[in-house]
Length: 111
Length: 113
Image (cartoon, rainbow over all chains, first blue to last red; front, side):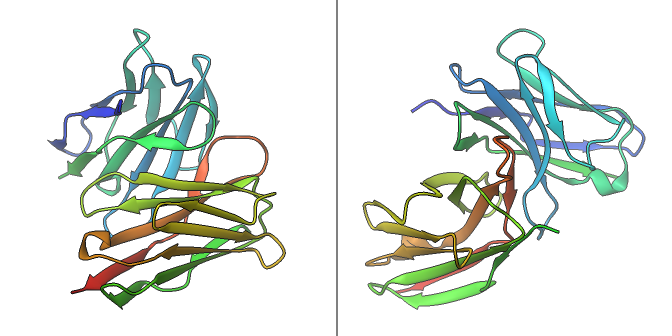
C-alpha cells in the first residue's frame, strides 16, 4: 500500500534558524496537510493545501510558516525563524477526499 | 467553541475482552468522524470513518457507532489482543466540507495479557 514519506525523521536546530521539512504525499492524492503534535498533547492542524494553494490555515500557521509543492511530488513546510515552542512532531498527511494518510513525522527540536 | 473529548485518558482491558472507547463533541456538526491509532513516536494510522447518516461501521474486530443526537461516537475492539495496545484518536471535520481534521486528545489503551 502506498505511504506518505517524510524527511528528515529528526531535526535539531538553533532558535532563529530556518528549517524545511519535506514530505512526499501519496501520488494520486489531491489534498495535502501539515499537522503538528507537541509532546504529550493532541495532534493540531496547521495548514491544508489544494490545487497549488493554501485552502485553510490555523492560528498557529503565522507568517513564520510557509508551504510549497515545488515539483508536483514533494510538499514542504518551511519555518523561517524557529522558536523554542516550535519543538514538536510535524506530520504531513494527504488525502483523496476524506480520510487522511499520515506520514511517520519529523521530530523537530529547537534549542 | 468547538470541543472534542475522549473521556478516558487511559484504559486497561484484559486480553480477549471488548474495549470500548468514547468520543464526545460539542458545538460541531461534523459530516463524518474518524478513528485513528497512534503508536508512540509514530504518525496516526487511519482505522475507520463513519458518516453522519451512518449509525454503525465495522471492520474486522473494530466497530464504530455514531450518534449525532447524543454527539457521541463509540469505538469497540472485540477479542482484544496485546497488539491492540496504542493510543486511539477520534477526529472530526469541521462540517463545512473542508478536509481539515480536529483531533481529540486520545485514549491510551493497554491490553493486559
